Image 1 (cartoon, rainbow, N blue to C red):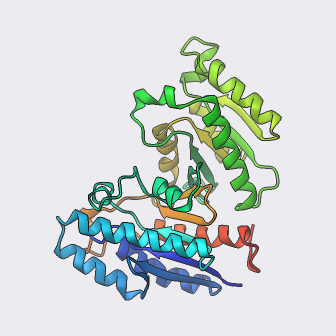
Image 2 (cartoon, rainbow, N blue to C red):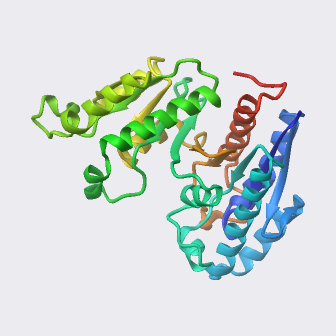
Image 3 (spheres, one colour):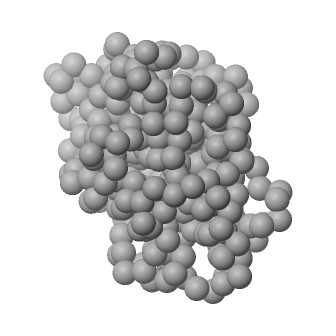
Length: 316
C-alpha cells in the first residue's frame, strides 16, 4: 500500500503554494510509493491549484479574510479526508494567524485547530530535524508553546510535564519505531536551579513528574540544565528532549537545523507535519524561497506514515 498524503496551501499570499509546488516535484521523484494530493477549500484540487491561489494572493495582499478562508477551509477538508482514512497524513504550508482569525476561525494556530477538528484533547508540538548541521538528529517537544514568558511558570505543571512526555514517548514508539525511547527533560531555571538557589520549580514540579514517569515506565532523565541537555541529545544520549517553554527549545533547535526542521503535531489519529518557517510575505512570488523545509516535511510525513500504518516501504 502506498503512502498517501494531503498537502494544504497555507496563506496564498505567502510562499506556501510556491514551496509546496516545488516540493511536490522533488518528493515524487524521490519516493515512487508516495502519493501526495493537494487539498483546497472544496476538497481535492490539482497541483495547478497551488499556482492559481498564489497568483490570486499576490494580487490581493491586504485581503486577510479571503486568505484565511483559503488556508482554513483547505485544512478542514484535508482533516475530513484523514479521518475517513483517505490519506495517512497532512502536510500544511504556513498560514497567517491574524488572517485565520479574520476568516472567523479563532484558534491560536494550526496545531490547536487540528486538535479541535480531530476531536482530541491532548496534542504536542514537536520540532524534529532528522539531519542537522552537526550531522545528528534533534527532536524537541515544546512543553508549553505560545505563551508570554511571565505565564510559563504557572502553565508548566507536573501534569503537563507528565502528559507531554508520555505523548512524546508514545509517538517515538509508534511513529519513529524506537522500542524504548530515551527522553531528556530540560529544566526551567538556570543550572536546574542549583539545589534551589535559582527557583523551586525543579523540586516542586519536575521531581514529582519524573517520579510519575518512572512509575509509568518512561525512560526520562532530568531535570537537566538547558546549557547541556541539547548537546547531550546531539551526541546520541537522548532520542528527544522536552523543553519547558517555547524559546529555550526553539533557540537550540533552529541554531542547528534552520531550514531543515519540521513541525510535527503529536497525538492526532493521522500524521501531520509542516515546514518550520512562516509565510515570508516579503519574498512571495520572487522565486527565491527555499523549499528545503517543505521537502523535509513531506519526507518525514512519508517516513512516519510508513511506520505508523505499517506500509511495505517502512524504514526505521
